[in-house]
Image (cartoon, rainbow, N blue to C red; front, top):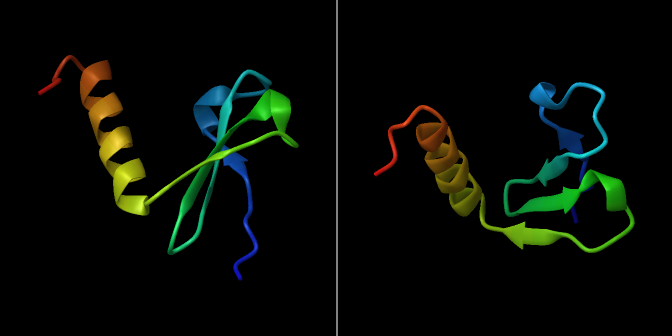
Length: 64
């Protein structure tokens, strides 16, 4: 079993209203930073990569 290390985006600064992720080779976990002991969403790394790519494109106005 892998130990997961939670991190938040550097864009978040000192804000506590963030999404945090913990990535392992097999899974990517996503949680609300305000509820660190609460539930988290687990997705395949490829799904997380696809989501981040889509969000970045949308931010730049390049949605498909």
